[in-house]
Length: 184
Image (cartoon, rainbow, N blue to C red; front, side):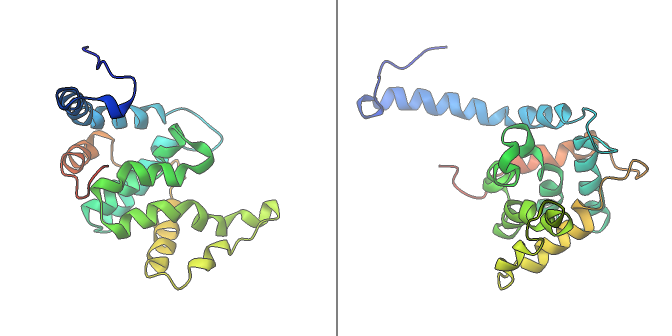
């Protein structure tokens, strides 16, 4: 691969930046493949009765079967993908992955779902199970409560008949091919 010559961005030429833009376009074109690989890597046994991939597939399947829109199903599938790159703040990492491709509402739900899930377990560690209530007046508070109740916390069932990853692949590829916001 051809490398640029500059060592400081301020010294880059228009030709070098055009080259970098072409490389980035190629990287963006293959991004769905990398995300699918992250999901596949989440199919490792762990402390739950299901793998993290199975959990994500259950959440997305439940959302799909409930008639949620494509943005929402996409988010449900990817809501925990941040575990692969930032386990200490997986919600924020997953929200960053999906941000250019989903509505503000769906992005906010993903961004906050980790905090909102705390209602089920923070108290077991001496934490505040109602920490999410600082957002009680937010317009998407109830939507995030519903995501956690209906799709996230309910999706650890080894007997739930979730749809396959392949059944979500077209949605994933179509969504990643159509950004809604600037990625810069």
